[in-house]
Image 1 (tube, rainbow, N blue to C red):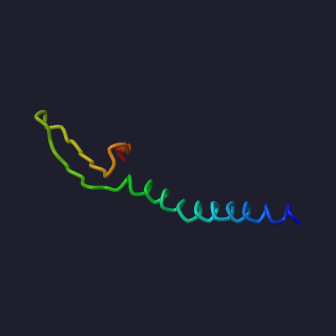
Image 2: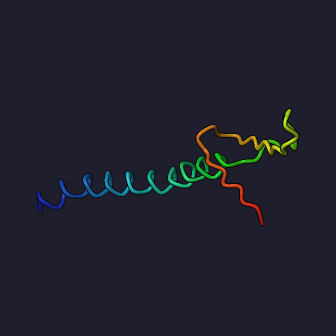
Image 3: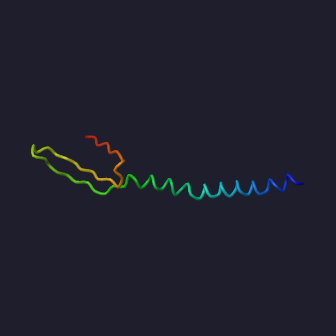
Length: 69
C-alpha cells in the first residue's frame, strides 16, 4: 500500500512534465519556421553592368541557393 502512495506523486510529476513539453514543443518549432521569412528582393546592376540579385531574409543565419533556370 505504501508503494502505491509514493508512486502516485511521481506519476503526476511525470505526466505534468510530459504535458508541459507537448505544450511548448510547437512554440519551439514555430520559431524555426519564421527564420526563413523573406524581407525583400532587390534587382541591381553593378559597375560592370552585371545583374545582381539581393535577397534579404529575416534571419542572417538562413542560406539562399539561387539557380538559373
